[in-house]
Amino acid sequence: MGMQFLEFAEVCERLEGIPGRLEMIEQVAAVLPGLDDDELPIFVRFIMGRVFPDWSTNNLGVGPNHLYDAVAYVVGTKRETVREAINATGDAGLAVERLLAKKEQTSFFIEALDLVDVYREFERMAAAGGQRSQREKLRVAQGLFGNVRPLEGRYLARLMLEELRIGMGEGNVRDAVAKAFAVDVRLVEHAHQAMNDLGEVALLARRDPEALSRVTIEPFRPVKMMLAQAGTIATQLEDHGEVAVEYKYDGSRFQFHKVGTVSRIYSRKLEEVTGSLPDIARLLVEATDHDVILDGEAVAVRDGKPMPFQYVIRRFRRKHEVDAMMEQIELVPRVFDILYLDGESLMDRPLSERRKILDEVLGAHVAPQFRVTEVAGAEAIYDEALGLGHEGVMVKVLDSPYTPGVRGRLWVKVKPGVETLDLVVIGAEWGEGRRAGTFGSFLLAVQDQGRLLSVGKVATGINDETLAELYALFKDRVIARSGKEVTLEPEVVFEVGYSEIQASPNYESGYALRFPRFVRVREDKSVDEAESLDSLIDRYARQKNGQGSL
Image (cartoon, rainbow, N blue to C red; front, side, top):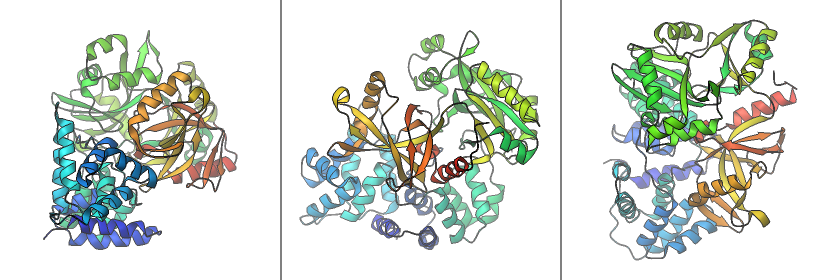
C-alpha cells in the first residue's frame, strides 16, 4: 500500500514544528527510502511546495477563488464564509482545516487518498483547457477536498496555491536525498543542476547512485540560469587578477535550445516563449548549424539604440498578434554563454573555454566580451556601457563553471546609483486619501529555504498610473484580509532600490531597508530568483565594510 496523503500531511505537520534545519533534513531523509518509485519524485516535489518539475510546462492554474468555491461547496457554506475564515487566520491552510473539521462530524463517506491519487488529480487540473477549463479545475478541487480529513485539507490547500512554506527548500531537500541514499551531496547537486528536478534525482540516487555523476543537460529541458551578485570591479580584480567584463543589458534573459531544425526559447522563469519571439528564434537558427543550448539577453532596439526593459517584457507577454507587435518593437539577441554543443554538456568547462567555443559555433549575435587586468581598463568599459544605454557591466571569473540557479561571487553585476534588490511581494495595505480604493504600500520578503521572510514595505516611487496597474495585478491574488492589511499569493517580484540595509527586529528576516523605493515589477523573474536571506546578509556585511560601487 502506497503512502496515504494523510501520512504526507503528518510529515508536514512535524516539520512545521521543528526549528532546526538539521533535524528537518533527518526527518525527511528517514521517510524517503520507504517510498516506492511512483511516490518518491512526487513526495520530493510536494515537500518543497511544488507540484511539477521546474522545467515542466504544466501549471495548475488555481487561484484563491477556486479554493473559496471548492471548499464552500464541500463544507456546505457560502464562498464569503470561506474567505472570512481565511482572512481571520491569514493562512489558507489553517482556515480550510478548521472548516473541514466542522464538516467532518456529519461525513462518513471519505475515500482515503494516497499521494499518487492527489498528483493524478493535479495533472487533470493542469490539463484542463478551453472554455470549460475553470469549471473542470473547480470540479477536481471539489473532489479532492471532499475526500480529505482536516489535517490533509491544510496541506492540500497550500499545495494548490503552491505555497507550502514549511522550510523545506531545495538545499534542505538536496541534503535529505543525499543522506537518505548515502550518496555524496555534490553528486546530488550536480545531477539537480542538469535535470532541474530533485524528484527525478532522488529516484536516480536510489536506483543507480553512480549514474548521478553522468547526468547531463538535455535540449528542450531548460535549466535554471546562472545568477550574479552585486559586487565591485576592484574586488573581482583583486581576487582573480584577470576577469571578463561584459555589458549588462536592460533586457530579458532567455535560453535558446536547438536540435536540427527544431528550436525553442525559454524565459528565465523557464516558460516556453518561442511563439512570442519568433524573430529571435529565426536569427539564432540562421546563425548556427550546430545543436546548442545558449544563454543570452533579448534587447529591444530602436535605430540601433537599446530601449527600456518595459518594451522587452511587452514582447515576452504577447501571445496573439505577435507579427504586429514585432513591427512595433524590434528585439535582438545578445548571446554570452553556451551550455551544450552537439550532444555534450559544457557547463563544467571554464568560462574562457565556453566563450571560445561560442565564438566558433555562433556566426552572429555574440555579445562583446573584454578581458581586463587593471581597474582603469574595466572602468573605461563600464563608462562605455553606460554611454551606450546599458545598465552597467557584468564581471566574470574566467575559470568559472556554469552553475544553474546559483547566485555566487563568480559573476557580479556592477550598476550605478542606488542599490537594488529583487524581493517577493507577500502583502499590501490599503491606501488613504489619493490612494484610497487601491493598495498604498506593499510588504516585501526575501526567500530562505522555502520560507519567505519579511524585510520591509515600499510605498514610494509609485505614480498614479503604476498604482492602478499594481492594483489590477494583485486584486485577484488576495488570500487573506485583516483590517487594512491583505496577504497576497507570493507570485510577484519587485525590484526595489534602497539606501542602506539595517539590522531590525521589526521584520522576520532580522533586517530592514532604509528608504526603499519601487523601481519596477520583474515579470521575468520567479520567486525562486528573489534575493535570498544569505545574499542579503552578505550585502549587509559588505556595506559595513564600506565597499563602494566600483
